[in-house]
Image 1: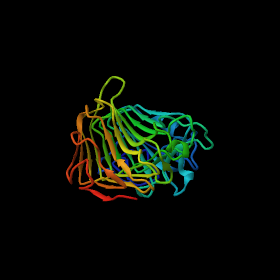
Image 2: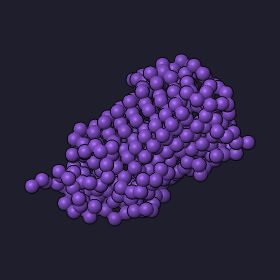
Image 3: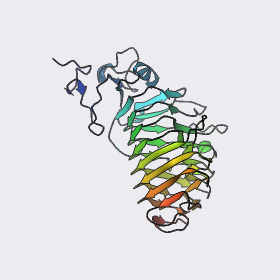
Image 4: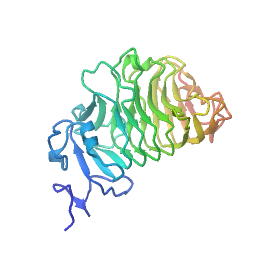
Length: 326
């Protein structure tokens, strides 16, 4: 007999069959998280005995053992895992997978701030681990505290996989107007793959030089290296020319390359961006745009040395520029 911690569902060789991530078998302990009807007094080992809070479920994961949290969605915001403090994801090979319809925007297996929160959490989640899978859920921060930027997710780890994750940062009016807000920050994060992910929201007006994605070196001067964004969608609604899709303006913040492959960048606001990306000329690497499309900006970047576009020049409105909004 093959033992499984998922007795009430279908399993194969002890692994619950609740959808796959590229056919990868995750053979650790599977814990279920149901923010709508779970309880932290449960054992978390089946949907019927699911935990209620993400921080508690994370505390049960073992470092390096391929344990999994399944975030159960119910099609509504009731399935939101609420955080009242930053969650530091520091356990290697520990995974989080949403069980919900695999829509690309604002999946209803969701992580956000506590209901009624008045202060932003910067960052809401901080990943320092490696070899983790994050898939099929959404994130949102929209408290709107004027004094603090809305900083959603930071990756300071390496070799992590993000599949169909919606990074809904800058959801509050004040957050969308703060220059230091972002949806994702690569803080020395390296060799990560973002596959079919969504960055930003188009429900708030942005009029500051904030960015969907920020690329930086960490406190130990380790640059963000060899990160890949594949078939991702970047969204905003700009009411000024200053907002950015990508900000890599720190000298030495990036090494080797950052690849955007088959990605689409859409500004649906009333103002046309001057550039989609700002890049420091002293970067240690190159941003490569492979078959990408840009809507609502005049140029990809003013720096043609560190931005290379397979479809045309980086500093002129050709090659992948679909529409310039006026």
